[in-house]
Image (cartoon, rainbow, N blue to C red):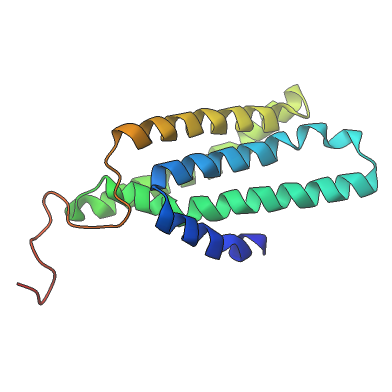
Length: 158
């Protein structure tokens, strides 16, 4: 319920900032929310409830920002003819993570109760650094426009 509430803000940010920078922001927000689960056992019930509520809000904002720019980034690298392939590879990556994630998460939980959150937060922070680097080196457009290999006009235009 919080993710749809943050969508207007995420879309507003999407109109003002480059997609790679927003992806880095989303990764940092989600990393912070996951890392904030590590000290959860130190709170009483009321404190833990408030902590979880704040964590969910930060996570939801990160997810809303991610959702606003993820496919834009994927498709910014594809020509019109390859858009389907890029989209399919993106969906395959999500499918594989959905299939492998529970096993990896269980393995990490068997090592320690905080291991999954720590590992995921570190991976997301590394991802944020990669997105910031790509933001400096990749011509990722703000809006979709004609790319190399695209026809000169749209249907009905000359």
